[in-house]
Image (tube, rainbow, N blue to C red; front, side, top):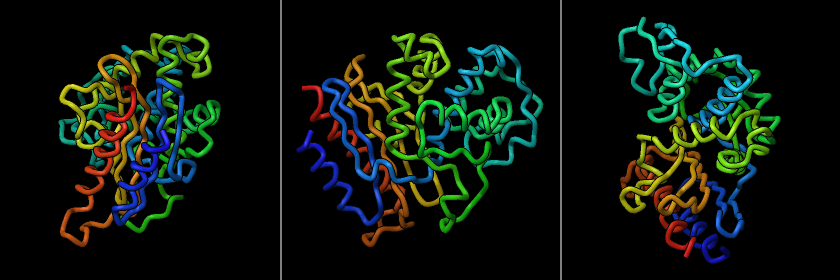
Length: 279
């Protein structure tokens, strides 16, 4: 793991912006991080915990996966996902809102889900499982410029997201762990499946062998780009990797767009970990 950590940090040091990450080798249990407890904007990686808090509400009988949600125009004033462009008034199931919130990062669905579950409930759920560096501040995020403060956005840490992903993975087969999430193995398997259906693949999966399974959630903020997920080799979970870039310039000195450099870095971190872990 030591050589791998050195290589990951070398990749991060080579770019002119802040990068933090968390890595857990799921074969050996070894873990490492770079600024792993430093709060950063979560962007849409926040939706992993929103989904899991929603599944807790389903387990408690407060919400139903099959209940119908009517898409109201007031939720469509956002810039993420596909439902913002559709004619309001149609309905989808709560399950499908969770799917769209994750796989295409749909903020129309996110706004509806957060209102149904309740923002304070989501925050309490995060605190109850030990996500002490995560603060949820809204359903649909405000439009902010690059100079926003951390207090204006939902924040998290690479370590928090890594811990959450590990708990979800363990809970798919361990009822006791599922209970700590207020859920069941069946609902946690649904959550993991939804993460694995992710359609936005320009970061963690981008440099992995074609067809590699990655259960993950991307994020795009006004000043950084991120991804958090479980990387598999075949059907075997290999590692958990969460990566957050901050203060990414619009353009690097060599002319490369900042988002391109950030995407490439996150993809490279994933590939180096994939190649060096698991034998």
